[in-house]
Image (cartoon, rainbow, N blue to C red):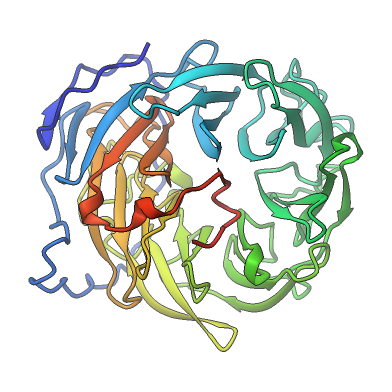
Length: 474
């Protein structure tokens, strides 16, 4: 059932968290933190001041311009603590939300009262998700006994084990139908939907990593991506058509793969977050993407995780998922430049570093917190995005001035526990037609209302479909 959300205050306490959640061990944090960036000018009234007071378990805090209006907890069979909520795609009045156990289709025609249309149980982390017309694509990045939704976990050392892409027909959102699977090397940690120029085809750029000489289908060096071609009218003909080598020189870390790729089809551009490297690609030939520039940050970036273009295609925001998402990195020990965003301008076809951005709040050491998935908010003439920070919550921030990013809104829950680190928080936070939608690892599906006066003009753009890693222009 949907929890009714009380009207604001800015900070309030909710019921205690359920016991027995998954506990993770936090790895050591790198040292050598740089000094904090310059403070934002005092006349920027919309900027949110840093908050250092830590919240109690399940307490909610927010800026005045963000308010939770709905929460739909995870439903069976996704109501276990190991069933992590993951990524989100949108089309029409529906949100498609991945989970380690499958995916859920929500009707969000009334954002304050989302309704579940269907839940598909199909285990296989992370179940990264995208949608195009009647087709839904799901990534499987855990070695399975076969490609069915009844599969069980099986070692990647066994040749017959399966990982890759699953294709569903969602023309009936109440009853999705599994129609095709495509095995890909090293599985599919994430994938990016790329529209073909003939409008009859879509491509999936499949990112995966962590090869091993003991894995028959995931041999090192794994410095490529898999490209799956899907004829829209005959999806059962989907197949891998290319595995381009993005790092013929071996890359910074003798590349073990890319984590995520974001494409800007209108501009024939893509940006890849590839472990130790950030790359800019020319995708004018969809089946042969070409790296045109590559950057590294060996001081402050540990794990290049994802990328976001600005609307003009002149900037890229890369994220550093320091600690792999399981660490408490939003604290004074780690500082403002690690586990953060890095903003690059594109100058004459090359990526030029400008600044870092990190949420200006110190979280408890029992909260996993680091830069994660976000999307642009379509504000004309400004570069504004909303972003998930796991248990650091949701941040709305602006990078119109690449060298001086600033936060203009936030919303967060307190920790799941005040005695131990439990993996949770917002995996993805995206803006879609007037509201922010968040997939929380443990708490389910959140809908955040944003005061449009703080970002005037955003509601003037209406999306009919949004796969965040397939950036449209507005």
